[in-house]
Length: 377
Ligand SMILES: [Fe+2]
Ligand SMILES: [Fe+2]
Image (tube, rainbow, N blue to C red):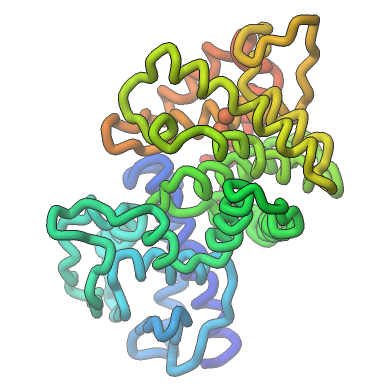
């Protein structure tokens, strides 16, 4: 594989995974997805100049192209994880591929396997499938822990370790969190055209990992929009990763409940900001900002929300940003029991909340980040 082919392939995979992340976040017909698909197709056609087809294989979690391992980066990791999730062990794309076919592949990669109905090959795309390990007879998922273990996403592993240590009341490994955040910050610089390039695919919507990394990425995007860099940027990312750490002290029955919580359960749930802040306060090396954010992230701009302090309170900037990211993530998250909201609906709701639940200027700034995403590339 020539250095040019290597670069073309890297660009193709980055565009493909970004398109899949955008399709999951918005919908397949979104303008951004169409643009990314077109660009991905251009890169593919470039590759066909020197290759009779593009065949990608996964061997031991390593992506192989042209009999050589492809240098790992976050986009490659995302593709490998997504292909594995669908049980695809190799993927062959032939010259002449239509954009509709590539869009079909993007659609597959953007979805959870349970929602995928037909993994049939198209005229120019062929799959090699291994046993799909994530399905049971009734098509329901195995436990979150098993699924996460199978995905073998380096960051997910590291993050789960950190959170499990919290559950077992062991020492919090702050360096693990800080390392992840610095990876995200670096990836932001590498993929400034779209921060969604590194947003985890929605197929992994396990709460602890995906929610926290989403809030981290959204907070980092907001902070960068405000011109925040360096140590402050990292601390905002770390605070986001840890904002819900208090939920580790709430029983899984309450956390996992899909119907509305009763009054007693709701009172327990509302303890998670205080429990998280207390835990982080007692952990050496945790930035003060993370303690404050854990405590304040369910407080509201208009003074409502929880916990309710018994004196006038000024919320920290990072807590406001986290509340905005949290509100957005809750609306965009694809829950099986409810339809995800369209982007227009999300924007309108956030505009309604600006000035009461959410900090108005920061909300407008956040919506600009979203606009930038649409205008990007
Ligand atoms: Fe929370
Ligand atoms: Fe949260």
